[in-house]
Image (cartoon, rainbow, N blue to C red; front, side, top):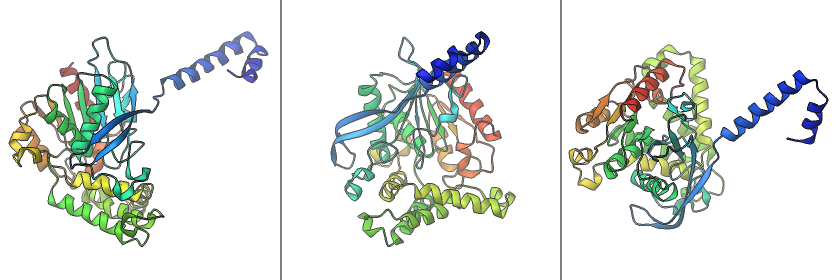
Amino acid sequence: MSNGIVNCIVQKGKGEMKTLLGLALVVCTAVSARAETQIFNAYDFAFENGPVLPELRIAYETHGNLDPGRDNAILLVHGASGDRHSFDSRIGPGKTFDTNKYFVITVDAIGGGESASPRDGLGQDFPRYTIRDMMAAQHALVTRGLELATLRAVGGSAMGSFVSLEWGIHHPEMVRGLILLLPSPKTKADFQLTVDLVTSVIALDPEWQGGRYTHNPVEGLRLAGMLYYPCVVSAAYLDRISAAQVAKELEESARSYARWDANSLVFRYAASRAHDVSAPFDGDMAAALSQIAAPTLILPSASDRLLGLGGARRIRDGVKLASYAEIPSDLGHRAGDAAPDTTEGRFIDQQIRAFLAKIE
């Protein structure tokens, strides 16, 4: 507390002093409760496709406290354009991921946020990473960095659900539950085409220079964001909002893409494009999904035209202990990121709370 604040309190009456001290306590408590970004370095990290980085940086935050048995940890993984803050509105005392019960870990996946990415300087020479590389880096963080032997749950939205699936397949002994928002076990041809178009639009910017640019190709990124927007909402949603709202949301999408380093965005979407959990099983999807032993909550959006419902239903049919519910919404792919106080948000909250209660 600064001298100025102390002097102010001394000069006040007894009642006012209590009020000021109470306010100071509230401020201090809020500051201490705020999660701090932490860094874990994985040394000599070998990527699935062969390259090795001497040091791979993984940024993460933790919320809440480990219980004495060290078995109440939940790992949350964001979508392709998100970061470790994507679930902030759902984390805290009494919230969906209740920090009075759980030790919640949020992480920046390889290639974005404050984790190692092309923007660090390697640019086009950064390893072409995969969804399984993201999972492997997080496994190193959890087991070596945090020294945890088990996770109460691993969950994520879209790309985060891809990563979560890999956790369930390759580390069934560690994971007690999977929470899959907007999932698919393998990307479809139309999603792959969308990524190809996004990448092509960025490459058409003269600043791109084959990815070895000196100035970030912002205009190409803006156009890519506008191209992507119609894919993440439904036709019904576009029909019910005004032209002014469409224009506003298009601009928001353009701006969000323009904040990315172009190589980092291109690499991130390339990893999502190549997503296929059956690849290590010679393309046998049934064999891949049968590895999952954990109870699995599957929550696709009923109106998602970016990933669709087919993949989610395939997971439902291939996982032994699956719970399936479609988010009733016309928000399309964006339903997975709906605010907690919306109809979609409340539905997601109810489903996750009920699921977590069953695996405690």
